[in-house]
Length: 103
Figure 1: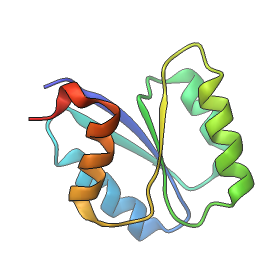
Figure 2 (figure 1 turned 135 degrees about the vertical axis):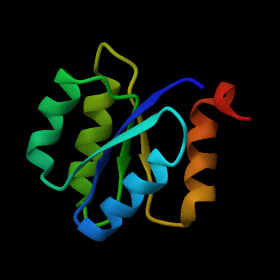
Figure 3 (figure 1 turned 180 degrees about the horizontal axis):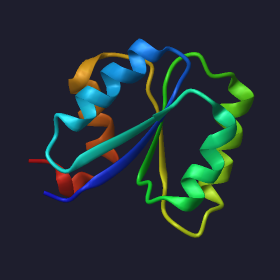
């Protein structure tokens, strides 16, 4: 199984903790969670990140800035707007971006 590194950004700590648990329930998937938008840019620059998962509580301006920031990087970082729907939806969102990972 190919490994994926997630950065999950949101404002609700319980949701962030749940997303981390759901993500890391998949072999090879690891998640870092952040609730402070200001540290996310440096984190992405300094660490391997395959997917930025935007969770609830973020303002639209930050979300748009983050999408633009990721598109302009020298590395390929995908962005998922994820506002709930369970682990099945999250997996489908990931598989849509990485179809080769589908079992």
